[in-house]
Length: 116
Image (tube, rainbow, N blue to C red):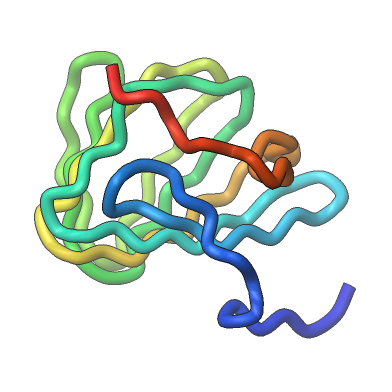
C-alpha cells in the first residue's frame, strides 16, 4: 500500500513495440501499457477478466473475429478466456486492469506473448 512512481517500475516487454509497467495488488493487477504505432499484440487469451482503458491514441482490438476501434476515453471489458489481439493505429497509452492478479507478469523472465 502507498505511493508508487511509475518511472521507478521496470518495463515489462509484452511484444515488439509494446511494454508495460505493472502494479499488482492482492486481488488485481494494473498495467500501464505503451504501444508504438503499428505494433501488434498477437492473439492470446488468459483466465483473467480484463478492462482495456485507452488513455491516449487509437487502437484496434479484435475479439472473437470482430474488430473494435478504440480511442482515448473508451474502454472495453473482456471476460475470462476470451481470445483477443490488438494493433496500434497511433502511439498509445493504455491502462489494463486484470482480475485476478496476473501472476505471469510478476515473473522476472516473462517473455511476452508468442507471435503466432
